[in-house]
Image (cartoon, rainbow, N blue to C red; front, side, top):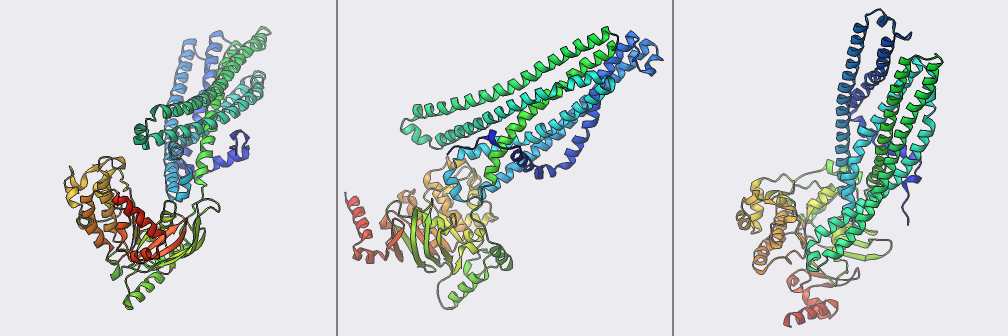
Length: 632
């Protein structure tokens, strides 16, 4: 399906795009109002200068249009007065222009920062489904490069255009007050010039849109190659990927060349019209002088008026180009801001959290702002001698990543509080999808999931995800210190961090680092081994003391010695907690309470290790294959 071409957008749509920026501008209206107020003295100072130059010539020639107060002064004194006035107007214009530029640019940067923050917050709130279909490079381009252009829409574009229009109106007023015939002649040039500019700006807008799209593709390829640099080099893909990158880069250059052409065409057109206008003033004005219908000083003023009149028009065209680029950027940014947040907390869940938040003795001092129904269920279970909370119930759950291509089909099971469950099955069976649904990274297409008797859609996402901890196969590490990678921004004391590290048997490894818990880790933890990154993931889980623990091949990255250290910590972490374990090595899950065997999104077998071996089904087949591979 072909993308909507920006040149086909209506002016009404452009206006709505511009209105999206107004709430941001209102936050800084004080500086905006002050900057707009300076337009009046700047425009007047700019328009007065041609008059003063004309008066100098008229005074020297003794013409009739010389102002009365200058005629009564000696020539030298009159010229000196005009020089002083000219210097004052130039100084006023330069000083106020500089101050106004500072104010407007500052507002532009503040608007840019506010939009970038809102965009980042919105993007991080979107469902994982959005990131499945959106390349990272395109997101980076929109959050950085595109947003940077938006600030210029207000600071350089919109405010600048208002200033240029105001300046042209003031100059036009002065022209008509001096000689209306020449003034009207200059103004009649504007309609055809405006038509040419509008045509070229539309072409610029279309080319700029394509250029931004190619830049996004360029960034996507760059990000992909940097992230996968190991595969690129190991499989000798450097030349092949370089050729792909060169192709996209050439397309980007071609589109940028088009924007340069149309932008230059606008500037050249206005420059040509400006010169023609001056020539026309000289021709018509010269004719009037020969017929003694015009003074030489007035003609001199009009030559400067023509120059000053087309200067704002040229600047207007340049700023209009900025606005066109801004509309393109706004179009791309709003497409992200308008992306719906699929997974939201219900109003009732927030009310429940506000109404009831407390510590429970069976939560190991784990702060969990939970809702009444869950707490009541847990208390009932404790009073009946049952295990603590952590019951998980899937009720006829169906799920598809796209359309009706279901990867989870009618899952219906209950995991009792404190029970240890293993999920096994071939690749694509739906094991990871179950975890993503449980954590509410995705919503079920049909059916519902309950934790301790409450639909997870009625539980605040923050509370739900604090109630459980997920340890993935690849431990992700943020740039920052070790301590921050354990707390992840939560307000844990340093003593709690050390205690979590000691309970997961990684304190010794941390203390051996150059600066211990304050050691700075590079992006993606490149100064740690895979096993060390995984150990940090265990400490993250331990410090949060969750009620539900999910392990997705959590020990796959550990060597034998490290795995032995973690296993004892893991055994302690599993006490009195519900656990879901995804494992491909079946030998590691023999001691779980039950094993769920999945195939193509369906639960086809369940039971203990011995029970499933006796059933001689898929699990028994997988077990035999792994034993055969071990023996071989």
